[in-house]
Image (cartoon, rainbow, N blue to C red; front, side):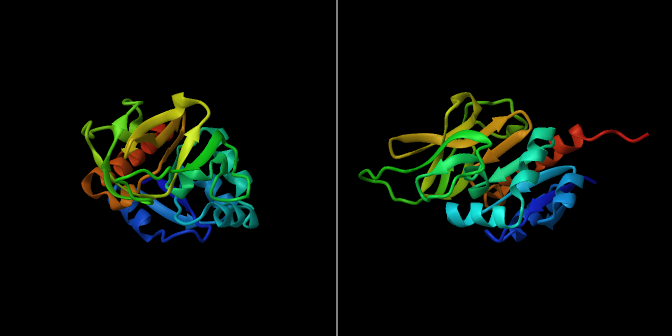
Length: 213
């Protein structure tokens, strides 16, 4: 059974993410230890809250380099919500530099008549990379649960794996680049379709693991 390190940096309740991974057939291991992150078959970086405290906690626990190393190694990696945003260079929400793994910024939604900020609730995805592992067995009109006031704006638009529209603003809802995948929405709160995404990630991890004979 695949062991998936779920990085703990005091930014959000990890319970629902772990339950979702367990239902998908994986063994989640909540950790802030570099050795356990490196030993795992895959890594999940969840998170809720504000940008600056998130990157400060990452750095205070000496997690920045292990995160960069596992991504560079080719190990399957999934960021969720704030765990997507902190992969970028900086955020309009705060002052601290992000991890800079993906070039680009995190920007605030512009207010316009008829929309609320934060963007909260169910919305449907438009797949811009329809063949990435996360989207297997999903409908092209899949709905996911969002809670965010900020969205990622990657420098390289080709890394965008899906978009979502809020008012007239069409923004990135997911990114995918090789082994690195991350989503703005909460798959662990997105009912059957969200569980399918976690199952797809676990299946992808299994497919990348060496077969023992």
